[in-house]
Image 1 (cartoon, rainbow, N blue to C red):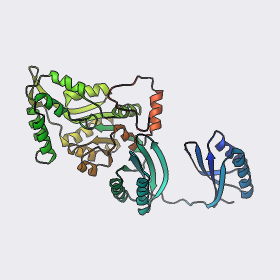
Image 2 (spheres, rainbow, N blue to C red):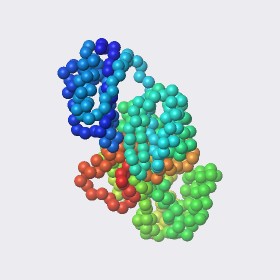
Image 3 (cartoon, one colour):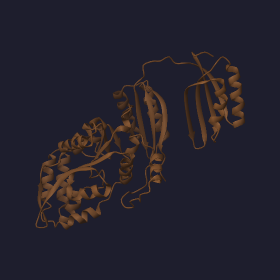
Image 4 (cartoon, rainbow, N blue to C red):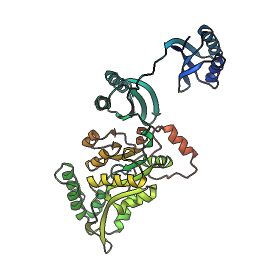
Length: 410
């Protein structure tokens, strides 16, 4: 066998220590060159593929490998392959698929769309099992825009989440994550909690709905809602802080990203008097929010300083990136509302989390499962890596507010 050909060796069977080394013990004295290799274990079943270039005695090599496979109790197949000549690399993408559950018809539809694009699936990696099932597909040979359009259509049909990202060295190098607070980091809206205590919950909701319908800009709607809080004692802020509930998976997300060296920031149309407690509790690096005016121990119904609105969130993202020394291309923004659109568009990766339809359509990726730490999978971080980091961490857990274990853990 010359350099223009190679031998593909496929091994299947029950996995146990010594299978791979046993096969290479046969190949080593024969002077084989390893051209490619991949091994997958599903539960305890092994699939091992080896592409090797040999000398002239291919028949003897096959015989020796077959004998060793029999000794190891595994099956083995051989195929002569033409060695590939160096060619220009096809564009590659990471396609992340999340479902709860993830059904076979969804995978069928997704893989059919990929094939329709003329693309190839080079590798499939499981990211998590339960309660979210998620996989990452490495896909080559299709332009980004077409792949995103095709898979977005299939995601809507199958009711699963699909994210498409260009495969590059910088994917895991996104070092700043900026999150919205209300209905993203926490469940519910702070201003509605305050309005309930002021007896104006219905009026505040009406103004919020008008803003969402486009009848009011954010700053006008915010000032009208805050005006309804006039006269509330400042002690109410402490009550609201105590009532906040983190979105399930929030602590896992923050804890994991901090271990990996990420800078974390919160950007909110809410209020510093409430958000500052989250910043301290979670160890957040930066925050930007609005400030309620207080006089004589009561809310005045006004605000202090400039309003953090849709444009202000994008400006805050840029400011935090500069402080962290992180290029904008290596930032991640997470939000749910129209007020987050500029921030999501400006970030290197904009993620819509349980968001309004207009936000899902505009974002680079959308997550509809109710666990905030599912965002880790979009960064290529597996549930096993999260669990291993937790096991190695001697620091005590925060029992309140985390809501659940990391996706993929029981």
